[in-house]
Length: 77
Image 1 (cartoon, rainbow, N blue to C red):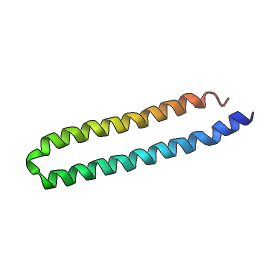
Image 2 (image 1 turned 45 degrees about the vertical axis):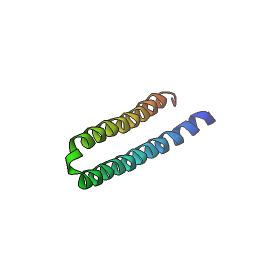
Image 3 (image 1 turned 90 degrees about the vertical axis):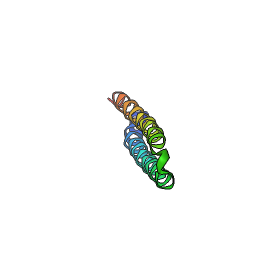
Image 4 (image 1 turned 120 degrees about the horizontal axis):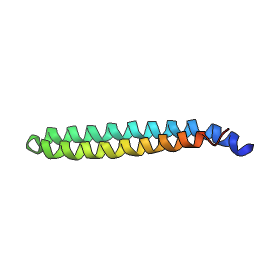
């Protein structure tokens, strides 16, 4: 019973941490890419490709956290 209560409290907290970390990382990645493009406009296509790939990996990690949380919700009942 105690494990179910701990799981019920930790899942929303874990999802909140994952969402906050993802938003923070995406913000930093895009800001850094825009700064780099402002400094070297001729390298914009390469920087944009690297930024998009990095953002996709960040989003994938967040989606994995959500999937694990939703799968763990089934263990509460």
